[in-house]
Amino acid sequence: MTLRLNASLVAALLILGSIVFVALFAGVVAPYSPNAIDAAHILEPPSWHHPAGTDEVGRDLFSRILFGARPSLLVAFSIVALASTGGVIVGCASGLAGGLIDTIVMRLVELVMALPGLVIALALAAALGPSLVNLAIVLGLLGIPFYARVARAETLSLRERAYVRGARTMGAGTLFVMRRHIVPNLLPTVIIFMSLGLSGALLGASALSFIGLGAQPPLAEWGALVNASRTYMLDQWWYAAFPGAAVAVTSFGFTLLGDGLRDALDPKNVKA
Image (cartoon, rainbow, N blue to C red; front, side):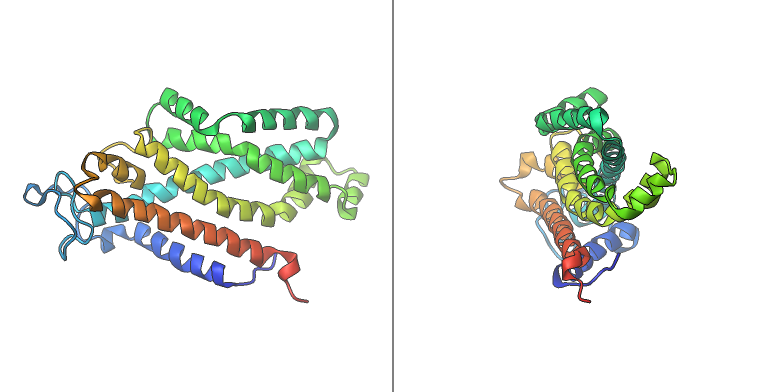
């Protein structure tokens, strides 16, 4: 798997590298504790002391946004990890099995994809209870069909290759063929979809947190911060603007990462 740098990939690495850095070292970078209440500075606009303003109990929003990067990124990566792992297993197994099993599995996948994803996510998240863990599980499970279709399509092509047929002829089992020949060769495609899926995972998690089904107070998480700002949005614009900008910039970074990886890993773009 050859990786060639390009403008989109470099820009994505700079954006996401900076965000991951502040998430990891928020305790050093943030000027205040994310939960430090200051009744003397309630709902103050951005200033030198509070670059992103303060919230309804005087907490520094800049610090809360920095600390909020941790749960926001963690839940996005968890969603994509669960969806891609489950999808690759289902798609590879279905593609290698073929016949009636493949038909049944793909019809079930298409049935799930035909359902209104947001409605199902809302129902499941509400049933399980509001928390980031439940949110990640729900969105991760709903993402499995998309990766399953990608993995199956690649598997159908790979299983016709000479080395796969040779392994089958020599008596190799399905699990061995999947682990040794199928999964390693479909990883570039899956990685591209994973990088693009991170953007949707972040937006989906932030949306569910915005309506109260994700992070719960006092945890600083970007979607929850925007949710807390609803009452003050018209007069205290900074309360919603800065957490929303963090979501937008990070989502943009993930999209650039996906575009950059697609160009970098595309064999047509690799010069001999």
